[in-house]
Length: 103
Image 1 (cartoon, rainbow, N blue to C red):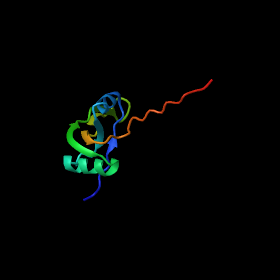
Image 2: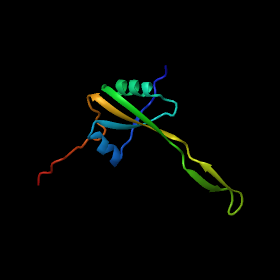
Image 3: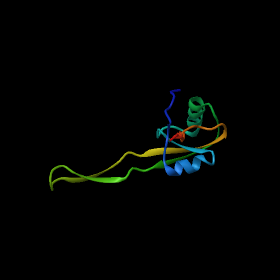
Image 4: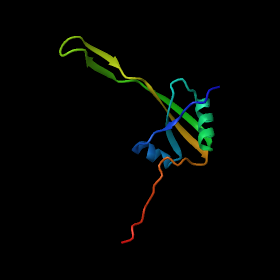
């Protein structure tokens, strides 16, 4: 069993979800929910309660090989996201470092 890499997603929507103890991660397309849960528990030392996944299809992109000749279309890569609900613990993805300035 190869360890998979899970990368936390940092966005406004992910920040609002983290207030409800749900964290969003980019995961490989081949990873299943059990592998994702084990990888997050190992990397962040937390207890995972639920994992929901979705595959976002790559957008269609137009390109040109030359000025006006040979137009073509292709698609970007598909990506997979995992919404992970924690039953115990928390992950410090959105750390706020408030610095007080003394003037």
